[in-house]
Image (cartoon, rainbow, N blue to C red; front, top):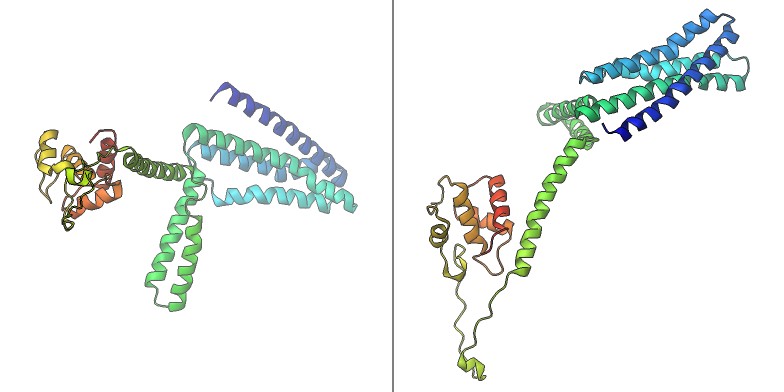
Length: 314
């Protein structure tokens, strides 16, 4: 952690400790006045604010060992402050004082939970592991798998329908708050955008030579134009080049459809397909033509070779 981060954590922790202590003192004073006994007041504080502090520290220790917090501990972090507030409210002689005594325990309880949360987030930042997020993701995945199984195999039609609707609701929560998943999805989209941008720029900046005019066309004489040729069944290389020519220049053996291909052979076929049309093919069209011609290669390999091809000249 940087020095600035350590200073910020210290500045955030100091007021939490101070106001938590003030909340504990205030609760002790209120309970002493209500019960007339310091020992009873200490017992009330231990059962309310103290129990909350213990549960917060327990959650912190579990996070330090990369373990999720049990449901009972998470429930206690909410139940103990509520119990302390109820005790403060019912022991007050008047309604305004009841409101004050119900809010006083919150100072210590919120401070304890705030400190635990801050330290837990610091541990996640340092280790890169968020046990709570992993627990939520695992619970959502298991619940979704169960609902999908019920929707597909349960003998009762109404139960299948209800499970199908519940599965869509659970799927909405899948991946919520998962920063790692978000970063991976952003990386995938960034790669796709890079390929699309390369295709667009290649099409825009590829120089195409204009065909020379014949003498008859130059003087304005009418000429007979042959009928346009029919579309070939497979893409043809530009400038009369064939796949064999491209492979010869690249120094690789011409691949045969259906065979296992090396990286250089994949690059040679993609290069031949890309510049077989004017303007050059896009990545999507080249991949489709690649598979239509009978060649096989993994998608990640095609993407890798296509990106490398974008840095070369035709």
